[in-house]
Image (tube, rainbow, N blue to C red; front, side, top):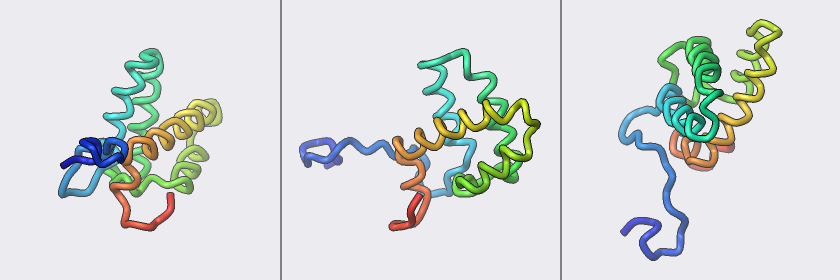
Length: 113
């Protein structure tokens, strides 16, 4: 029985990665697909920035390499004119990761985001 088939729990939104370490690029792909549906004009720019973040974290980076601290360090490493876009992106990306269960499924139980 699944969580949504009568148990009263919300449907599971966990990522499709099973039995291996979730990579940042997996979460990025799902996020960009969602962004494209809602705001297609952002895809190219955000894809470019997220590829740069992955490279900064040691591509292919595990998802858990991306934290608030590593995100902030990456933003500071960017050229000043890119920082506003990067901050906006990371705010939305982190919210997406939380909402869709990426962070919960990637880390051990009881480790706060």
